[in-house]
Length: 138
Image (cartoon, rainbow, N blue to C red):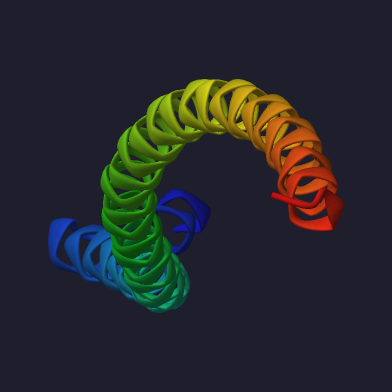
């Protein structure tokens, strides 16, 4: 009889095994739920990181736009500087021409001044001769 009491029936054994399997299934299911929650948390973190990268990308786009604007301004300034340099070259060329003209004009004025002095001397001598002639009796 002891053997009968200690021995389990097949139905009892199956019931125990099924209960253990259900508990294991429940435990596994709970663990999967925990893992799924962890993955959901990780997904949320990645979503946050993606949003941060989107923000960084927008900032870089803004910086790129600013650099493009700066490049355009520099190109415009280069063009204006080239125009100014050309105008300066023209002014330097004209100034050189004016300096040469000034030098020639000064030489001509010096010559005119010398000629005028000579004319004044000649006129002075003629004036003296005329006065001398006027004082002489005829």
